[in-house]
Length: 108
Image (cartoon, rainbow, N blue to C red; front, side, top):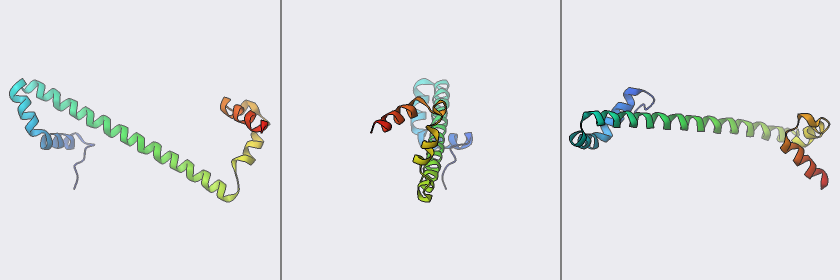
């Protein structure tokens, strides 16, 4: 079974198990204060990494859900083209990019 890096205990166990030789060398050379600083920085790095990965996977899931919704709309025949024709009547609801895209498409 893997180590739970989300808990402080799991992080400490991971750091101690994998960095024991390094920590001993640092402890002998620089003292316990710097070893504690090293461990706290490693813990912070692991925490930041976990937060970034969680955020990335949340974004990935959100984008996949949106993609699936669009796929289902296309599959059902309800395309954005029919919706965008309704939106063209009210340009105040459109973003600058949508207005620019509509201008380019109308020139074709």
